[in-house]
Length: 115
Length: 114
Image 1 (cartoon, each protein chain N blue to C red):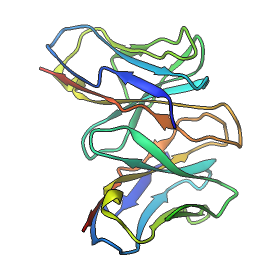
Image 2: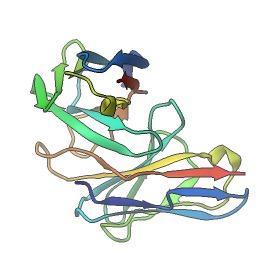
Image 3: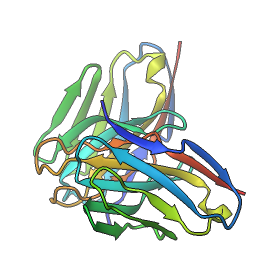
Image 4: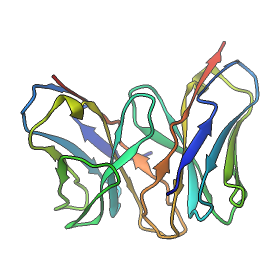
């Protein structure tokens, strides 16, 4: 059973607001990821981290930022939300093993609506 | 650039049928391939992971095969049940480096009627 949690589950917010989507995992995984998913579309990587103080941007251009101060915590922040940010945001993590247990574990997601 | 394609996009079957979901990828230099299940409005659950050196993996009624040279994988679901209704996604790890982010297909949405 995966222990990765995202809050809030749903968020409706007005344009221009600053928001932070929380993601925490209790499995001690080094690698964490943020994906964005629109209905019927594939997941797109927006940020990833290979450990504390390590963050990188993914393939999809994003106006969000992330931080990794603690292994278990990987929050995503939007400084000024816009309607184009409306989407589902999925957080994931996995172990550092090379051959064993490369399975990716996902949180339940945050459905963000910006009005 | 690696691309992952899943066919069909949607599939409806009566309960009890055996079915096959297809996944293809353009670059055969993958590290592993995973099949996930996603229920509406939820996150993804990993079903099966196949390393590039393996040909198949089995878990209960699910069997996933991998033909890396041809860039194909299939997910076989035996004796389908209404509870199998969900979207199934295929994802590849594009380089032989641990931790590289996965590249996903758009998924196949399965509906099993009772």
